[in-house]
View 1 (cartoon, rainbow, N blue to C red):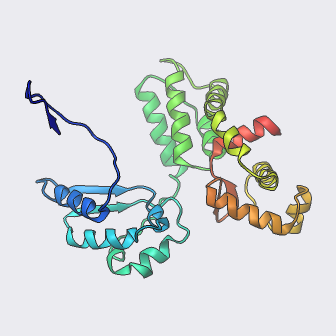
View 2 (cartoon, rainbow, N blue to C red; view 1 turned 45 degrees about the vertical axis):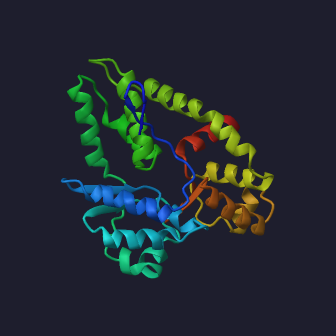
View 3 (tube, rainbow, N blue to C red; view 1 turned 90 degrees about the vertical axis):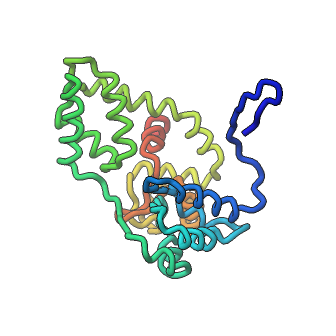
Length: 263
């Protein structure tokens, strides 16, 4: 905060500068939150990134501060669980074992459909179960892309009107087009073998065993070892993710863009 000496007008600004004593800054921040009369809940998104810091043991430093400020409730949101369970349950278990682990699964179809239908009806608009089911299936129940599509559909559908397949196609195409510049940039930064693997996974949707000879031969990929090294790199970059069904492209709209541009 600064004050003009002549007018005595106080102004404030927020900026991120070089932080020489990060632990001290975080300690002061927690002390400030703890001074509130109301309960404070602090959510840290992408919490797994702390484990990748090289300059300081971020988890250890944060853990010590959290222990001394127990009135601030914490939510640790983990997008990439790989390697995080070790951090939570072993290395810094004393602090983080007190956290309740909650796995956020896709919202059940019936519950999600009821929610979406009620919002449209309240605004005097309609969306059919068939249209909603096609959205839910296309994005495998993923809340992020589904909510984005529903939001755009809600805006594009006139009052007393219904969502049509034409409106839905236009909405998805417009979203893909908006992000196309980023997708082109991401693709241009990949090696030839990585691009070939991205195309192969986009075609199949989910690949249970990308190292299999059948998959490699069917898509004319270089070799099993090349696929393995490319898959590791693409997982680290966040272009791929792996779940129970296998290897997938993380961004559903990126997958739609690839299919639109190359297949």
